[in-house]
Structure formats: C-alpha cells, structure tokens
Image (tube, rainbow, N blue to C red; front, side, top):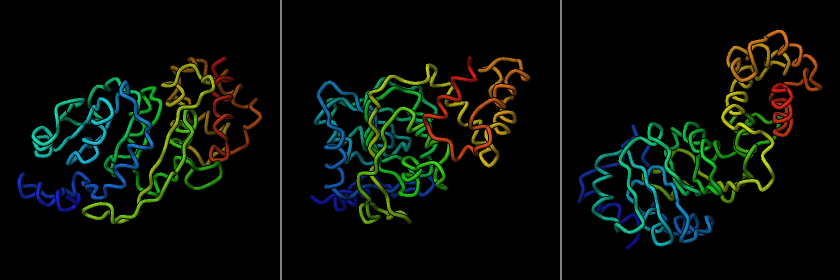
Length: 273
C-alpha cells in the first residue's frame, strides 16, 4: 500500500487531520524513508532517537534495524503509534522532546517539525551522538553547512561544525509530504568529527558562541566586551582582565560572522586561560 493511501486510512480510523499548530507534515514517500534508514548505517546495537514520530512510517523501518526511542507530542498520534507499531525495539515517549530528559542514544534519524528546528538542534547537541540523519527545511539546512561571511552563518553553524561534519545529501521536494510544506526540504547528514575536541566544556562553549552572536555585527573585541555579562561565570569576575584579553586578540577587529569555527575555539580557549 502506498504511504499516502495508508495515511488516509489512518486519518479515518483514528479520526485526526494534520495540525498546523504542531507543524505536522507527514512523510508519504517510501523511498525517502528508506534513504534515511540507509544513510544512518544502523547496527543492532544502535539506539536511535526520533523526534516527532507522527504516523510511524519511519519508526517501523528503524525498528527493523535497532532500538528506537520515539518522541511524539500529539496524544492522538501516540495512541495510533501504540496500536499500530510492533512493540519490539520501541520505546515510545508521549511528551514534548524539548522539555523531556534526554535519553541515551548514539544516532538520530528524524523528520522533526520545522517550526522548532533551532531548539531541537541545540537540544540534541547536549548529547554526544555519532550520526544524525535529519530532514529539515532547505533554508535551515543551509545554515548548518554555511561558511563564514555568508548570511546563513550564525551561532548554530559554529556549534554544528564544532563537533560534526555537516553535509546536505539531497534536496527533497515538498511533494514527499502531506500536507505539502511551503518550501522544499533537504536531508542533512551529521557525522561526529574523529579529531580530539578542541574545547573541554561543550556547554560553556555553546553559551559563549550564542552570547557573541547576539552582537554579530560588531567586531570581536566589542562583541566580547558587550557579551561579557552573559558569560561572566565562565571566564571569571574580573571584567577588566577579560577586556584586556579581548583587546589583545588577533581577530579583535573582525566581525563574528567572519570568524571561522576553529578560530572561535581558539578564542574561547585563550579567554579561559
């Protein structure tokens, strides 16, 4: 049975329709589902996180490979998932992923709701996963792979490339979903870098980068000085010493949007000394 026909049958059986409020656009392309599973390179020992399981079309394919921890906020869809999916390899959590305690997982395969993409990315970056295969809005996906100087380059770009190799694998037509989203999508593959982390405390580095990009149109020296109140506890209470370090940076006159990921890491480590 084609996925669109199956979706229609499920909508009748469980009396639901896509909710715009929850940004529900259900995948109806089996080839796309299979491609996501293939890209993840799943093994029996893997634990996969899925955010927004929806009607479970992706979930059931993941279950055939390994354990799946699936989050779904919609109560009707949770009932559907509980009734329709096999119990094997499934841990279903009927709650808001952004508010829940992070489970233990090593891979992410998901078609998350586009309206919460930024928050979801920051949330999964709290974990140390190996691989993520995500379907995201194309414009958002381009932020994850952007280079310094491009308008898409922002704090999330830095924090993505700080720990992962990011690649847009394929652009996806809006015809793969029902209802059709207003823009096209893209498959993004994140692979954890094999090099030793340049920063010891990832949570602190995240706060630092986000604080600096609040003032991204200023040069690094001024951005750092203005951002200091947001990161005081990371770098110590001596504001004068912090300002002196900021003024001594080689990149002090360069805007944050032109600073490369490795340079952000170097600046952070220098300010921590």
